[in-house]
Amino acid sequence: MSSAQITDPYDITASSNNLGRRRRIQKLVSFVAILSAALAVALLALVLGTVLFKGLSQIDTAFFTKPAALFGEKGGIADALIGSALIVGMAMIMAVPIAILVAIYIAEYAGPKAASFFRVMLDVLNGVPAIIVGIFIYGLLVVGKGQSAIYGAMALAILMIPMVARATQEILELVPRHLREASLALGVPRWRTVYSIVLPTAIGGILTGVVIAVARVAGETAPLLFTSSITQNQISFDIHNALPTLPVRIFTLSESPSPDDQAAAWAAALVLIAFVLVMNIVAKVIANRKRRSLEGG
Amino acid sequence: MSTVTPDPLAPAPIDRQGIRLGDVLFKGIAFVAAVGVAAVLGLLTYEVFSLAWPAIQEFGLSFIWTQGWNPNSNVYGALVFIYGTIVTSFIALLLATPLSIAIALFLTEIAPGRVAAPIATMVELLAAIPSVVLGLWGILVFGPWVANHLEPWLQSWFGFLPIFSGDPSQAGILPAALVLTIMIIPITSAICRELFSRVPRDLSDGSLALGSTRWEAIRRVAIPYAAPGISAAVLLGLGRAFGEAIAVTQVIGSGNTINESLFPPGDTLGSRIASSYIGASTAIEAQSLLYLAAILLVISLITNVSAQAIVNRFQKARRMSTG
Image (cartoon, rainbow over all chains, first blue to last red; front, side):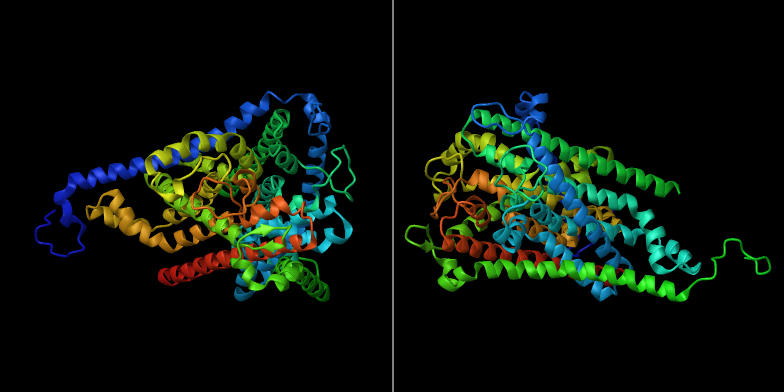
């Protein structure tokens, strides 16, 4: 390669007389990039490791079967586990059908303008801080009627809807066009096509979206602070009253100066993080299996 | 395709009216759901403002630049919390943006696929850690480390800067900003990674073929190509940082003054709402907290909508250029 004839000032080979320096910069940049990735991985390991180390020693069967401590007694998280399961379960029941319908409208029925309008709405709703969603439900319902697990679930459902709807809509748009066309050409009405061709094809992706959304809202504290936080810390299944939850429990315990409370906070954090990680792994497995079956078919 | 033998798979004679009804009904329900979700966004904005309305009437816009929060003398102002929100979020952004770009470059340009995939998963998992758990770690492990090691070190080297002056503190603006950094790295780095992986291969190959080093190809081809997307990623990270309340509440302490130094405790809009709302002693204090919520809502809506606008314009330009 002769670079002598080239006079173009933007020519990058013109500086080849600095090759040594340019290679050193290249090495430096690679080093910085590797270091940054290592830092992120180290942070993850550090946080997970600390939670595991500090939490594991506190965990025994009693921790899962007893409710929170009163005074000077070693307590458990049974009440918070039940509350979290009920609230997140209700949120899922509320959010998933609505989210899938919204996604179907955007992907199957809406024109390009309407589709982009509703997509932006979902993204903006997704960007509303969780604490504001808590305040919204607080002002709308809690102010007059008092806290309740149902209102907590509604707040979490508002957070879930945009996540699940966007994930579903993206998957629906990946469903091959020819499947829809074949079905419509056979005279199957549109809604049946969506119900029995498009949704079953997309079910893996939809499930992945749901699982990830569940994992995320299961760790949300701020919306529950306003809707389901003033609790008795007793085992209760009464969804018309506020129920204790895992994240709110961790939040309250973490602000306590007592070492016993802090130890309980670590243990509860370990349970929550284990749930979240397992859900994320489940989502990955579903996504991979679905991809393989699509590729295989 | 046979036209003589009757097709056994042929659909039974169909009731056109029934199909039409089913379709209209289904489309209608889906439409109502979509409109309902859009309406929730509107209702939410209306509700937050109407809850805050008494305080908005009482204090007017000057609330925004009033400093101080004293229920006893009925002085309420948002300036301290707006300052706290902006300072923590911008420090987080300042640290997270270069780190995220570097991580994305590592994953797309440097690491072989076998290494990149698990590391990408781990960076994603960082985003999966619930904020209350990160806050717990922040208050009990990270905060003390910041106070005992990081802040004294910063002071000994950069103590001449007013932002690094004063006594180290376990809870404060600096640890809050660093915890936010950890929270937004996975968001921005995931988007940057996506962007870099979409840089057309022939462009970067062309640059390499002309004799540029990998970094030069990245700097002159990949980064300019991805720049609008990176700015949208940064805005999305910023939106997340503005709105994060729980982890920040746990590590920022609580403060009613603006300090030059980053060491002492402070408060952000979100952290003040989260820590004080339940204990608000008077109606006007509660309404002032809701005024803070309204400000937070407006800030995050603006940030998110701008990010969307950038993404949309970027995609439109891309679609035109590719065909």
